[in-house]
Image (cartoon, rainbow, N blue to C red; front, side):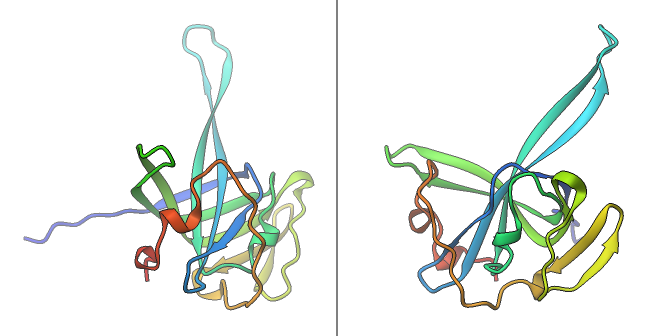
Length: 167
């Protein structure tokens, strides 16, 4: 009997930093960013309402055109799957990371409820401003390359090779 499994993630949250696009040696774009999701609950002992925030690392393949619109504070809807991988840091220690590989991204706006207009993507109107929906098939295709800035994370070319691209 065949077994069934599901690896599906749906997130609605706010970007914690601007998206960053880097390229594999063969030129495939890999855009990364983090989003925060917050849940509110009532503490059973004190009766006070508390907020608990979780941070999620998101990876978007072949989407170099969308990074300019993914800025800190913007609200986004993400659908994708969980993927875990490991790498060796600069000191030779093995590090593990779990990321959400996004299949669909919808820009819902941000601070002030305004979404950035994206002329080359399909758009509609939603609550609180314009909504820009970008299924995986509509992302990418551009030849522009965003400049990369150094970060505390491992160097992109040391972590991901063309063999890691999931298509």
